[in-house]
Amino acid sequence: MKESVRYQLRQLRPAWLLCILLPFPSMLFWHSHEGHCAALFCFCLGCFVLVASAFRRLFTPVSPICSCRDRILAAGLALSVSWALFSLLWIALVDRHDFVALFIAFQTLIPAMCIVPFLMLMTRKMFSGVVLSLFLLGCAKFMAGIVVNLVYGWGEVHQDGTPASHELPWTSPNLMLSAFWTSAAILSLSLYIIGARRFKLKYEQAA
View 1: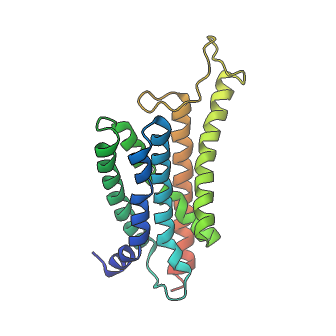
View 2: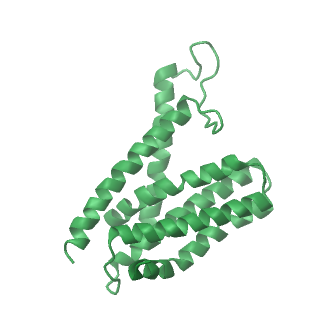
View 3: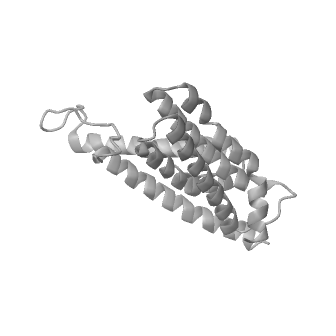
């Protein structure tokens, strides 16, 4: 492993611990559907904070110039270990048969790796980068809801008279979930490409 990646991993240890510990109270003490949702949100928040930490030190005077690939690689390794430990804790403390939650948690790694770096480069602030990343991901779900309403109408019912579904049934994808996946994928891919180019032009070539 390259020395720059090892350095990044050492610097990410506090954020990595936060990513692991943040959802732990909800998993341990809040045994309900709302508690499960809170644990998943806390894990998502921890993942966003972890990636933001990988780019936060870029704006400090003592930070060494590491390539965008090295920073993403270090964040990806830390996120992978975080997801593995989150999965073990979920199976041990919440529900050993609930693999859907583990799949949802795994999906959060993608926007964390793609959206957060771009917004960190834009805002240069960890809090702003994380909050705006969560906001944009929420906008992807909002756009999915608009697509459902445009297809089935704004009266909250399908053409056959059944209620229009704005739920996200992860085991049986509907229009809402498909539209959310599509919008989130387009958002993530676009911001990753733009962010990588911006990083290369502003920092790697300047170095």
